[in-house]
Image (cartoon, rainbow, N blue to C red; front, side):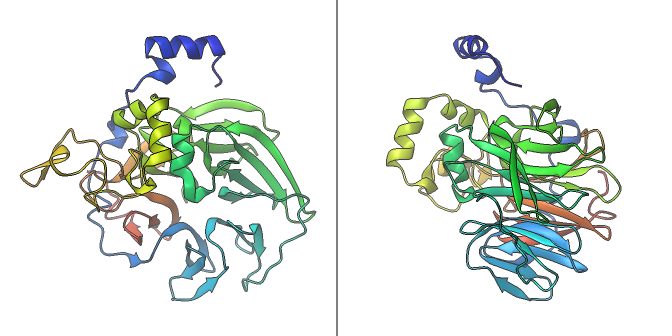
Length: 359
């Protein structure tokens, strides 16, 4: 997984490997379609981010609130960055309070952890009741993920917390923004490493084993087990040759971070095209009101269905000209796929037996 110093320098000189600006094509099982764009109106929100199935209905985070389909809302006082449940207990990560554990009535049952953890991007319960978590970055909160990408940081971590004892242990360091995690039947875990655009399998003791999905044409986020086996993988933002080029120009990047408001960076985002101040708009993207086929995009909507071997089976898209971008989490229940769309500010429901049929 890690290149040697000489290999990195050689790639940089020759413009190949990790230094290439090319991006894999959306093809095969990832062939673009409009299935997300064609869905009925979802449940509106401000910034829905993470969704789980809890007490027989979907539960999702929206800012500092937990929101249920029946309209109930629980305010935790700080922005929620990750959720997970094992059916009886709810694990919640917030910006201010770190990792919390809630009971069936949303009462706090958080143990006295032996250390603080912050900047959690994803959570999952293991079969033994422990909680696996991803820390995206030591430098930047999950709300500052665009800055972390542009700074090209490698300070993410994977760890596990035991609610029975309060012990928290970090098992892997120096990762490039881990943002999704799932536990395999054999006890190993898989996690998405967003800035490396791949999904990795790791033994429970932290020893790396193999990359199970590589060269993803976007930044992979949360991973959720499917009801019939396999996984759902959310791609929260797209890669493009333009972004790859910017990442390889340190002088430009640093000046942009220093001098330009973050809303107008040449960087991926949950949504785009809402302001004429954005770096790409007008004639650069459209001609006579029609989106150019080659126009680069800063946002996209994509969720991928993977089989048990992490091979893509099918995918659901909202293309560059759509509005349902920034899909950050998914959960499957009762033949439906529930999705949080940060870009459109809504929770979507996809019927896998109708909208999910193969083209």
